[in-house]
Length: 272
Image (cartoon, rainbow, N blue to C red; front, side, top):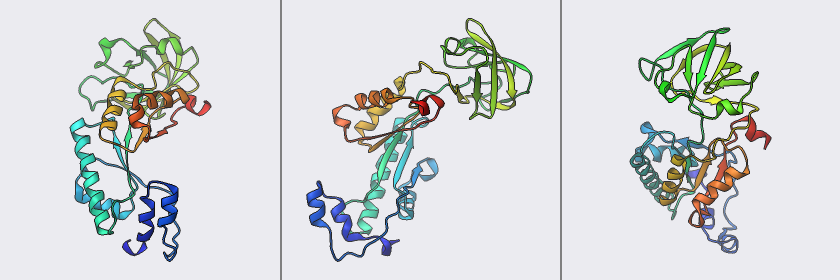
């Protein structure tokens, strides 16, 4: 890899403006064909150490992705520190003042999830095609789900769905057809069954929800990212431009340099 890096043009890449950039370009430098596709790597416990991150940078990683659906702030702060140490090491190997790589914060976003099945957090139940299951928003059943009764953490689901709508659970592996609506629950027919575990995501394609673009946790996470000078925000479950504007407002003037990449993950986001 060392022989393939066009070191002289990295000096120009670090300049503060286009004029200085053009002035710093080396006309005798061998032209290269840049790899336009970037490699984003999620950093977890197995890859958090500096030595492993250095290996990943040498292999061509362009972006460190931090998944804020999991992990404590202490864990993420350590990962950011290790990432910057790895960048310094690789830059020093190349004789460069820095190395072009970004740190991205991936928000949890406004998800809809099932509750926990009785027994343990890893328990599964089988939902059989043709059977009836009740979807409830009653907090009493958050940790008491069963094959007959499943808790969802979206209180207003009974207001936004109607009879004949479909609810997709666990990345669409299971589909439920809404047959009737009660005050805090839905009676559904299982169209596509399967094994269902705890805390699985749900989608409501074609249904406009009133979920906020950012949860309280997302807001705290964004401010954490601002404090630790991340370069990008991968904004989960963005449904419209207002969601992007909301994140930009949270980041404020100090975070105006942070790039926001909306993740289009549902039907509503594609439409708008």
